[in-house]
Length: 214
Image 1: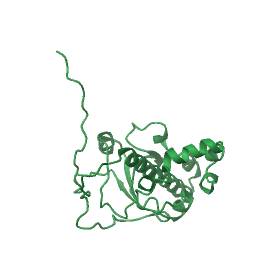
Image 2: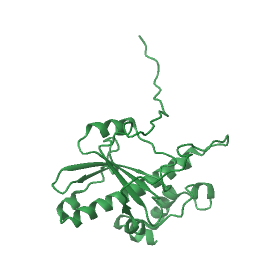
Image 3: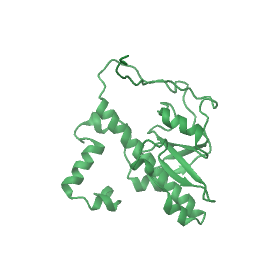
Image 4: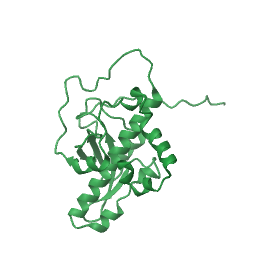
């Protein structure tokens, strides 16, 4: 209920509908595998925003960084998708608030009011948030969030996002670490050339379409 009170949109929901929303986003709390799969205690959004800070360099990773744990057990893809969405949504909300705070601190309240969470309406733009520089120049921002304190597990980027990162002027990539904690850390990269920076890009998915009939 404290989480609900943070957002006017949630306060306006009938209790039954709000309950449905909680189960959709967080899963059934009786199902520990679904609810606790992030391995992190979830902080209230306002607490996370208040504790969030920008950092000047990527946090160091362990030598085994990037290696995903193996195993032959059955994967709960639905639970994993819900968890990823929860973490991603949290990261976007944090960055949205930080961008508004940055512009307000620069005495640019009008620009702060125009910062737009475009991914809520269209997820095909190649970025999540449209923010601004202090002179009014647009700053498209793609947000990647993780519960880890570093990039030990890497992150996923779509072909569209990768293409836009090289084409859109002033494109920014924001990496949010410890996204569900009380003190997330945010590292930003302007016009990131991931390959040129030494990151390893591994294709994981393929689009399969029916054979063409000649």
